[in-house]
Image (cartoon, chains in turn orange, brown):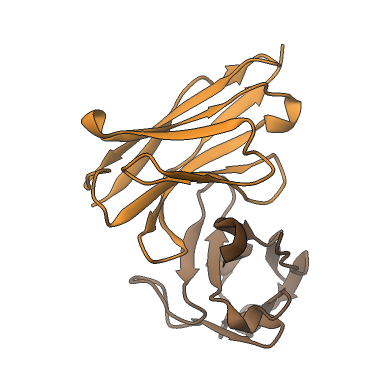
Length: 120
Length: 108
């Protein structure tokens, strides 16, 4: 059974960098059958796609976050990561990692999510 | 970028059918996917490629897509169906995942 689990600091200071990791079990991130990505949800609001990475390191980003977001993959540890620079209170959200099958455009497996608060 | 419009809320009595719409410019030319999200939980895919159901999703859930509107239908709503529902498409020009703002399905 495929499982994704997010981890990282729950509190980040304004202007600093948010870093999260998604640990994957049940499937290899180096499988060419999948893409790996991040989605966030501010409190009381909807879902916002952040970006997606393939095992080769090729990534695509939400145009509104492209200048601040980096999604990368760590094949040796079977995980992938998100870095978001210069955070503000608007980046406070639940962050989910998720899987997309290659050739498909929906997210079929999600992590449970991790809450990140941006505050001094 | 491509915009998806959903009604903020839909109310329905238990046992009755519920329809949740997702509007977009010529959305019928795209494949639409639907997620259910219960409070405090991660989203769950309930419909993909307009009308296909993942394994484990009840047959009560169905989808359709034509023209400028996609629709998620729950044939007989149960209390456990009360949740937020989000539609989603792929935006080819930007290689982006696009979500609708979500619809809260509430019981009467």
